[in-house]
Image (cartoon, rainbow, N blue to C red):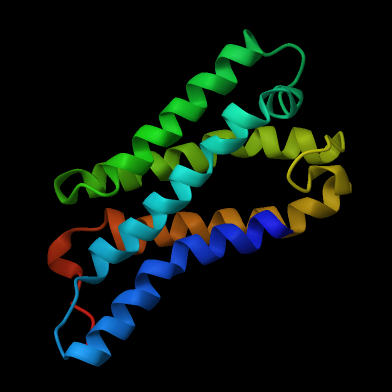
Length: 159
């Protein structure tokens, strides 16, 4: 549960800072950029598990998955690259679309880990963890799509 709170705090922190900045200075801030920065910060947080708790992440994958440890490291590098790209305005829409793909493609590992009560990041709680993780994934996908991936012309500055 702590990870969920950390992820949500990382996600919204740039938006909160932009809101305060706008209210204090009266200058508008682009919503898309600050939303992408929040998603980028979250994506810089995600690989920590891949590199610090590698074995726990390996255990989240079914035994038949090929080269599980290498896969954990590669997906960590992918998340790191997406996180960095979310800070570069020109790459934000593509990075957000890749983020959505990652959320969708990695979710089966979360299901496997929850069903098998793998002891990492809340999965040890069993399938009940998916009641938290599933909606979180939907929030992250919606954030990435509506605030980062959509055409910049449809985004309005904060007021």
